[in-house]
Image (cartoon, rainbow, N blue to C red; front, side, top):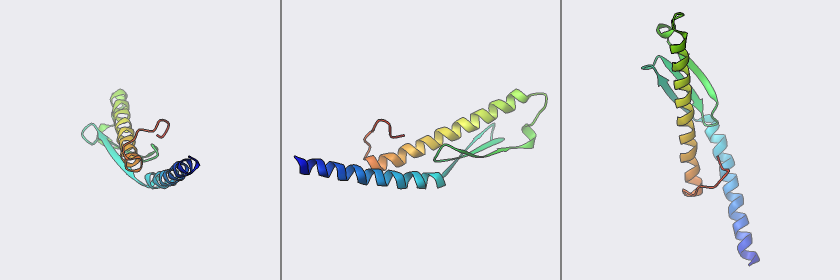
Length: 104
């Protein structure tokens, strides 16, 4: 029985090491999302950090700040969603599709 537990612990340590490497790799991977037909672009990394936000000058209207705010929110939210999907996809490669609670 102790041997079986040792194998489980070894597998858990290997998975933990793979996940640590994956997290490092995800920090370097990026996704991009746009809103308003490309008027606002958000670039997000695999750590769900907003790296860049581009706003085309044509969408900046002092008379309609709410529209610009909505476009920024939409682009950032879509970027975060894409980033989370990327993390889930990478995580499933390590866990073999098992959903492990507390792991992202």
